[in-house]
Amino acid sequence: MDQVRNITTVAETVASNVRAFRQLRGMDQAALARRMEALGIEWRQGTVSEVERNQRNVTVAELLALAFALGTTIEQLVDPRGPERIRGPWLSFSEEGFGSANPNPGTDQQGDGFIDAFPPQYVTGLVCTHADYPIVEWGDDGKVKSFGFGKAQPR
Image (cartoon, rainbow, N blue to C red; front, side):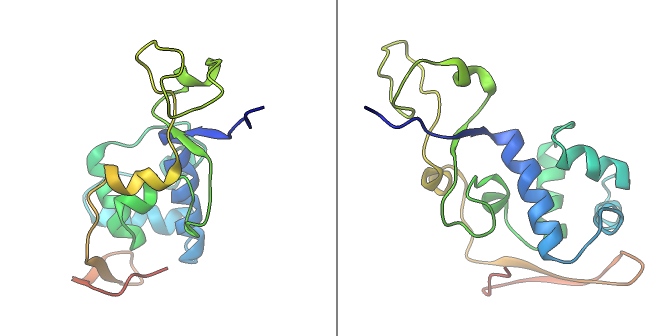
């Protein structure tokens, strides 16, 4: 008998990873909001809270700014394995696939032309990977003091 796989949406994954990377960086929600504000994204602490609770979707511009503000990459923000990148749930673009009777996510076993989810290791192939990572020095006031790109991947 096929094993039922845990599946999460892209929105749920981004919400969880924003929280995880923020906490790894030792930041509170207000500090992340200040960084976003310094990047021209009008966020407040409540906005961060809504994003982390999956009550608000992020735009592409916000996703780019989040990667910059959190010192990570878009790939890592959409990876369902989280910061540890060890294992995680399969990824679905929406909740539509959740009701599927397909016992093998990632396949069109039902012949309906839909693939309801795919394994987390395929996220890398969907997102342009970068050899360089943003290196940002933040001031106590939440503003960018300096920035550049480097080879060392921050955790």
